[in-house]
Length: 292
Image (cartoon, helix red, strand yellow):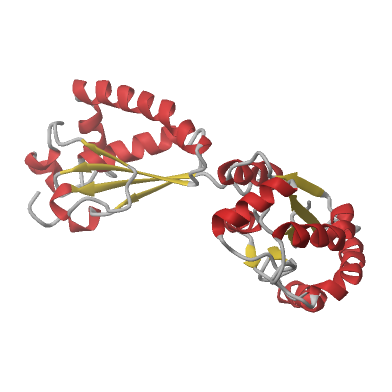
């Protein structure tokens, strides 16, 4: 798909994973709408294009809306016309009947076409109604053997671009005296390193200032720690990504969050930034006037 407006129509069998798919598109930065009435699709898409503010849209259309039954043929034609301009794509989620029945039993929800009958009969009717849409789909994903995490990976693989990486690292420095970051996945304590605060010429500077940065990095224990911690991260971060995590927060703390942790956060962030999208922040650096 191009770099302009992109429309993804998510549809498929009830119980095949459309909710998980929509969440994956949200993580990819798409503006998502669930259970869109088919009759509103063209008008909605026209408004999106006119606004120029939204570039990527994912819309879930399925049989929860009874109006869908009579509109599916026309909608398939309309979407096919959009597809010719490479702006729209249909993603159809499917699974075998046995798996769908099992999922409905687990959730104890009723099938939209089997409110007063057997689930298996509703599934058969749904397959007939959705056959034209499945045939028009550019991407069909069978979720019979897929866990939610694997389905997310399938969608990321198909729609994630170099400019839209879902996995990124938040790297922050902080001061233990102000409390632990509640959203951190990994916390590292660097209070064992010599503290520049006790040097008068460095006390009122931060790890962003070259003299403080150089002082911290020139300590023998700093280099040893840096190499080992970076090695640990390069080993573990790919595992977090494989497990479907989209945001990994790494927090490095010293006493006040202005000197040692800031310098090391900058260095480690720059190193990880060669492989992953990294955002660096320093939570407590503005509190430098307080006792360290």
